[in-house]
Image (cartoon, rainbow, N blue to C red; front, top):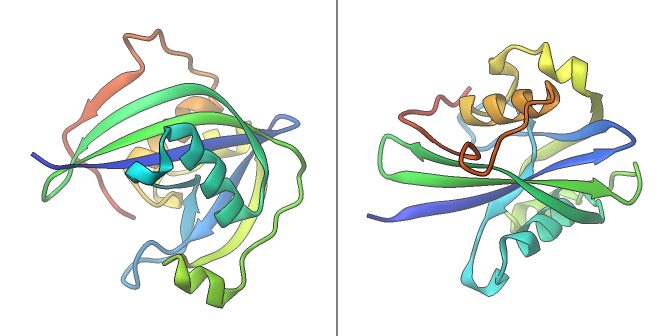
Length: 161
């Protein structure tokens, strides 16, 4: 069984969380997401993906923190392992890549913003790119902590919004 591995960063600066507004495919609307992307063997560690994706997607330099959640998700075809880390940004200044640079990276990001945790916790799940992202980010925004044994979860489906 092939498992696609995606690594994401819950990035904070002065108590606020950075989110990007992106369209994952041409058939979807722009929704809020965290910085993240696929792990490749050339990345080495998952932490290297966090640093690369924060830089590529939001222009942020980050210090990688702790592992927050491991989420194995059953998709219509196959599975994906979502690995969520915390990270601290070195500043609050975003730098979106130009459209031609985004096209090379297969990205379509139109906005980056900082949000208060209370704001995110109150959102409808449909404000996010997927039900998986909504669950993890809202749990984090609500201050939920997990023991090492509870960090890994399995979701038998995922809804894209």
